[in-house]
Length: 295
Length: 252
Image (cartoon, chains in turn purple, blue):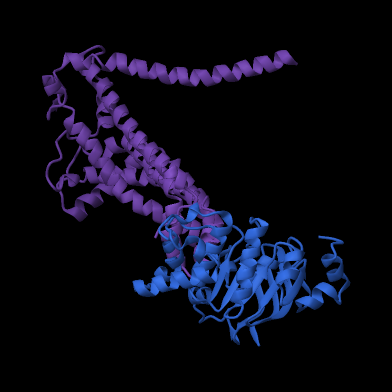
């Protein structure tokens, strides 16, 4: 009996540590393959404005800005839409409709990104071209649209759970004071669900910035610096798409190869910073959670 | 004179019959106590009076009968529910002060109604806090956060917040459940003062408390009204055997 306990405990322990072990291993591998790029290229080159690997120009700036542009666009579109959907599902929809909408949103999350990319290519991008009257429909904006669509399920489910977790007493208190349904949602329920809503947004951003396939298929992949006011409506190229597109053809051990891994490190760093900011915000907002009602 | 008249009220949610053919009058300027064991339907009845039940699963609830406030049906289609809730205020078992100053807590409902005149707000703060018997304890620290008050003070703050809206009726759903005897006595004392200007409907913490504060007492059991009448009679010479068994502690 005691032996069995011991074996089971040991197995669980191994499973737990292996998860950590693999994460560390991946990180070390990324570092080993990526860090050499920093002495194989000059800093001016690496953070330069031109990405032409064939001419040994490895400027990652257009890729970073491309990623940020597409992600930012996606968040601006997805955030209000996702929040509104979550509020609708939780606060306004009658029960039967909620029972349909919740699983539908979860199914949405399960659509493979390549399918969405395909849809974006054949259905969305022609629309973008016609409606915005731009030379090509394969633009950063198209990417933002697809990404927004892809991060919606995450934002909706997490925000919905956060709203659901707001104690009923908060709603009752506000309603009994003569707050309207809308005042209650806006001033009591959403502020009380604040940290959960922020997590929802951050998870949405995380999903958006790391997404590769759909973005690669619809953004046109031109590594150019978005500097005009309407850069969103021109092609762009993201960090993820660059890695995915070029990794297959690159000579292993070459500078280009190392730089692609270095882009991976950058991506990792950006995601890490976003997550860190999210946790900070949540921790700061934490102690006030539950009792928080805003005026 | 009856403030509220409840006629043949039956209330169902999901498959649960919470209230069954309840009829009663709630007299103005009195404390009406609704008491009974758990799941008797006390809170449900209270929450029917300000239509706070409206928001649970809209299609799963089912209400029959009539509730008249000053002779007008509060479930009539043209009734403004928000306005009704301002007229019929409610204090809950667990006080939930807003994370704002004491002052802002009290004027919160007024501000949501769109009140901006600061002289009116300030005057209302003092009056409501006095009515809730809290003024003397907080008059020098109105800009401190409401959550720093003790449990009993928080509950009186929530009472003040309700009073600030100048309702006709105050519903109290077991407001002293978490309070010590001293704070409980203070809340009960303020209720006795308040009944001069308000109609008070009160779900008590215990039979003893019910007997202490009741002008009119209503005994509910399993969603049915067993007996209603003047408090002193209900608690000393009940007509129904079940009422007697309950008030003498034979069950519940």
